Length: 181
Image (cartoon, rainbow, N blue to C red; front, side, top):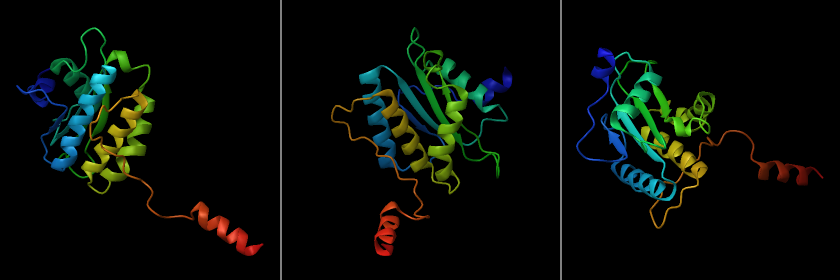
């Protein structure tokens, strides 16, 4: 319990949807994430908070996420519909944590296995290059679409393509077949 208290930052006096303690997100995308998360809460009631932090002090990522949701009161008290997406930046090579913690109200849609798949698909390709901005933009865009958020004029963060340009495109393959015929 003492370790958990030491690693979890005190809830700020201001409410936001993005807490970039590690200062690794671009300012413009951070503002878009805040607007989009606000639009999501307005249209679905679900609350997504994103955080970058230097270290979680040796805590397990699951425990850190769950305790932060509880201590900060992320999501409605009755609905338990909060989500915390966080990543550490300074725990050492190969030791940084990335996790998505969900309140009980979202566990049915986002069990641990699904969360792991989402992190692998939408965040890790960018985090491997130290690109926290696109990692958070991609995962948020995916969750926003899945939850059925409605923007109401908000300038939503657009997902970044994870296509590295490697491989053969479908158009090129069709061209080769036509050429062959």
